[in-house]
Length: 484
Ligand code: ADP
Image 1 (cartoon, rainbow, N blue to C red):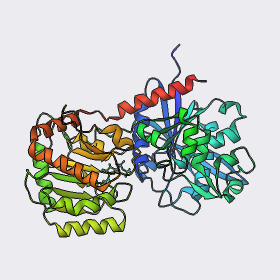
Image 2 (cartoon, rainbow, N blue to C red):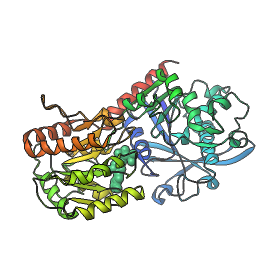
Image 3 (cartoon, protein in one colour):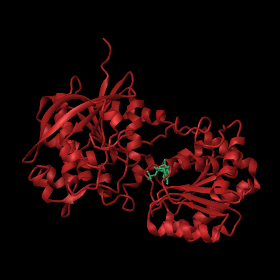
């Protein structure tokens, strides 16, 4: 008899191409499709937000409607289904909660999120042939799933044995709300879950998942270790330490179809490891476009990022004046805190031809940056995984990173004695360490072009495809399910 496929329900509040506000949307949009196959039937559950493009909502099909209990409330929920790129997506519909312009940021987010988590569990009774073996939850928006499963559904036969994984993409947002919600919305007041999700005078939804999920993951192995420390743990480090045996890190991948210098239609000239001449053309075109001096001999360092403290902007603005007195160019593409946007405008005005600031979000331009730059800057204070450094390496653009989180796991620092490496890195969150590392990278570019070209080749050979991460998720699912 053929073995039954393991059923995985991937629960998220966003997934491309339906809803995207950040990195979680990319992961949830790609990973389930890569996991699907002969051993796994992976389906995705999402809220039916009104921002989902009409081309998709038109194709959704009605499955069932049900009533979701939420403390004293009884709320309507419709289930609709859509098959997209071979993956089955269930959309949970309630216009009161989800007919909004944005995904998050409303006064009743706690209630909307609680509804979504409860509805995920309730809807399992209405999905034909799909009681999952495992629910894979992501970030605080689905953190209540393991809590409700344990507290409210544990006694029901069809829910018994369902495992849960909780993946942290962003520890900064934990879902903190006033305690009043505990009784009025969550219906968890006075239950054993109460102390688990209570934090001081508030409730912390992520805390609940960290206590109740069968396994915890973050999006890089180093970040999984870092969050067990006070510096990175965002006040949950003690809890992570107590569960470290059930905490692991799996790196995100990047979309190899979208980011491919050999086929990218958004860059002026395509190129490959074997023939890098197109990259020189991309650099010249970018220098021209940004008003920088068009000169192949001047190293061009780019940054494509949110302009925030997390991304190391305070270090950059501290040393940029000193750095730009040397023979190098810096171009930034990003939006973020006013003060950093202001600083970048100042540097661009002070160093015309050497520094450029494109203060907007522009995906097509980001491709031209990745292809045209020699080096990419990412001096983050913390970085759960980071995508930019992986994309850059695929384009033969060497990253300069701080050794933290996913940056440490993906960039091999240049070793001048062995020639090993895929980029440059520094350890401490210190502006002059950043400056020296930028200067070292530029020196190698100018004084030893063969060694620099060899590093580019090594960076382009590194494998950051989703296939690698998917294998690790599959292994984790199987191990967890084997535990019974
Ligand atoms: P984050 O912490 O912001 O998720 P990542 O490195 O994981 O950082 O992902 C950032 C993604 O957003 C990358 O794909 C990067 O190319 C893209 N990006 C960031 N800023 C911009 C911008 N201003 N314009 C276009 N793309 C951007």
